[in-house]
Length: 115
Image (cartoon, rainbow, N blue to C red; front, side, top):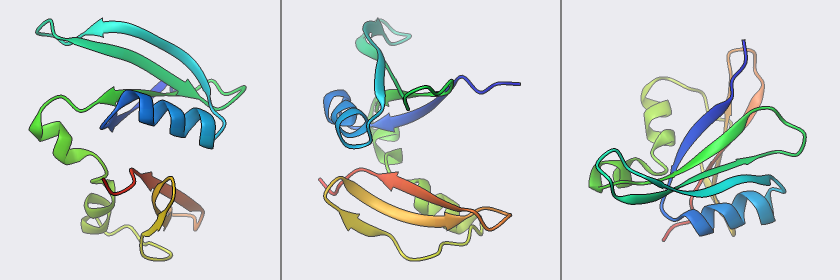
């Protein structure tokens, strides 16, 4: 079994690309014009860590419903009972919250900087 892509909803393609590529050091694998299911223009943008098989599809929020989901992972995870090592903190590149998986491994949950 292989995980090929994980989608992350973002406010802006170019800002997200700069973050993943310039700050985190990911490779920009694809950035091509595309369309929504109803024909509106969008982009197909994929980034991934150097040498990795799995990438991240950067999907621009489409409408108010998706816009409200950007950065919403923290609240959803707290409601589901996920244990966080510390409260979220603001960094220059965005908000960071560290959570523990079922084995005690620490994961960084990154969200957009406050706009």
